[in-house]
Amino acid sequence: MSAPVPVTVLTGFLGAGKTTLLNRILTGDHGLPIGVLVNDFGSINIDERLIAGIDDQTISLANGCVCCQIDTELVDAVAAMVDRPERPGYVLLEASGVADPMGIAMTLGNDRVKDEVRLDAIVSVVDVEQVFDLPELLDLKLRQIGFSDIVLLNKVDLVDPEHTRRVHDWIDERFPRVRKIETTHCDVPLDLVLGVGSYAATDISENGSRPPAAHTAAEFRSHTYTSDRPIAIESLRTAIKRFPAYVVRCNGIVATPESPDRQTVLQSVGRRSTLEAGQPWDDLPRSEIVVIGTTTGFDAAELDRLLAACEQ
Image (cartoon, one colour):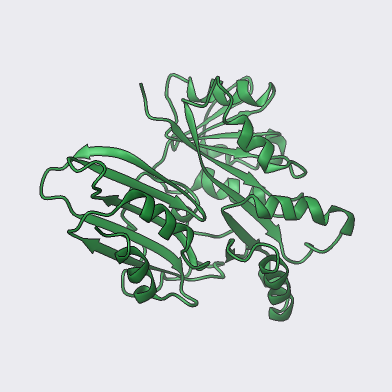
């Protein structure tokens, strides 16, 4: 049986910037065969030079991505995507601007697809300029934020720092541990929001911050923790839940007492993490965990203490 395909649910109110992020992913140089499920093709401006073929409700792109319109029940659409002859390595599901992401997450647990896909992350896009507009819909926006693993505070270039701080405070009062990234034009490193299946932070400097892109509002830093001692799985799960809010991603290969002869692969986005059986060890077991976060408040010593407490 093939490994379950990781799925990111992209949520956020109308006009927040989800389509901008989708276009970044569809045209990005990520090397992933991504399947994208959308509600409406018309809302996505796909560069005609990238289109390799169009078949009914499906657009195939030259970079290996495929974009399918959800014209059936969601479970059917997910099943059809992962059952394609060229199985995607990753699925991005765009939720309607007024959808509750919890309902979508529950749908992915349907008996028909639960062994075919796994929920990797829920990413919410928030328009910081207009988040407080339409007060009658604030509860919906809060549900979209509260169920998310990562929140992109988008369009920070359109407001002053005081307004952005107000949005931070508004979210922190309700969800103090949610991971937030400030962006403009949803320009965020894709390896922070997509589970790329690798524990290496290939393009983030180990000793400093990531060079900002043209519109990136946040800078990022990574830290690698290594250990020759086994790390208990449940202790590691607890430590990840206790990570400070500046931690966005955590990936790694872990040596555990529960599976001493085989690697354990760690994938973590925001507050969500998975630990799955990997390959047998080629050499002596050794854990290597890469933690990625925003530079503000980043404390490598604090992360080391939390992870060292998991050793046996």
